Image (cartoon, rainbow, N blue to C red; front, side, top):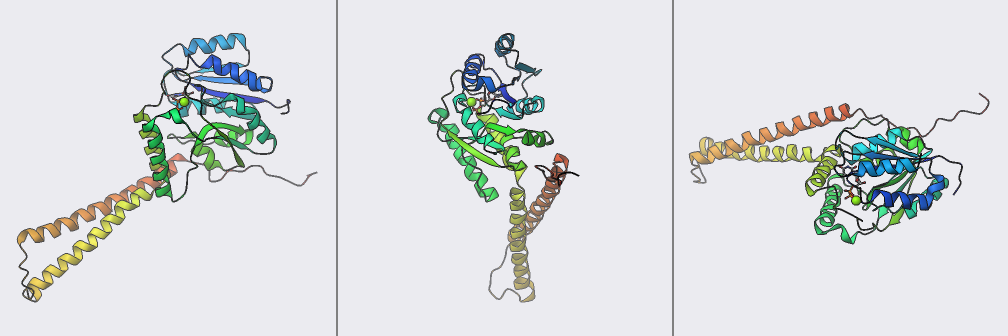
Length: 316
Ligand code: UDP
Ligand code: MG
């Protein structure tokens, strides 16, 4: 580890009064001399996390506090921290102690090796609970099914980002955001540090099942149009079946005078009529959805590309 680099630590804090001081001590113990600033975002905590981090600030001039007016969520807090950070590298980690500070020297070494993103990869988390584990396994399976590619399992927001990455990240305007997928979208040279998530030191996880479901749905609907295509496709198939069936019934009955003695009832015609109409509606909905998705894509206003650097010949 070299010393002459500026390093920022960003910590979103929501009701972590029982954890934050211990985390600070761990950080100081692990990489204290290398840190030029600790940015703690108080995301509308309802316990006394606010006072706790002010106590830390009184002890350590490097502590900077961003105090939100209310709870805006971890993604917003992380975004605010990254915008405020000035270091040549920025480390983002959870305030509950689940992202072990003792691994940070490894992150920094990888950064010095030339990696621009170093991500913590969780290998197991026995205490996460059945619902959450199953939920996250299902989520990854679903992502895999819908996108046809794998979202790295165990991917976390425990990350070191080079200044170049932070600058590019700050250009993203997405409102529905998931930090780790945005960082992945940016590209850059990335590597992993594996870790076993420590059990949460104190208090319950701030993400309720409802919040997680919401996040998962956002993750699905904001990244892919494939679900919309299913609706159109289903509509198109039903439409074809309906039209063929209807044509067959009419020709068989009226052009050939029912040679097969099928004697279709009035409700059979009605059923086919309804099938054709509903399939048209499904197709229409799918098409509307695709327009909507395109508008959404434009509204996010993401940069078209991300440049690492532009080089020119020396002496010009
Ligand atoms: N957090 C936040 N705002 C929220 C929820 C959580 O800033 O609305 C912070 C929380 O204090 C912690 C990190 O985000 O530092 C991760 O939260 P949590 O441990 O609840 O999530 P999990 O570990 O289950 O992903
Ligand atoms: Mg946690």
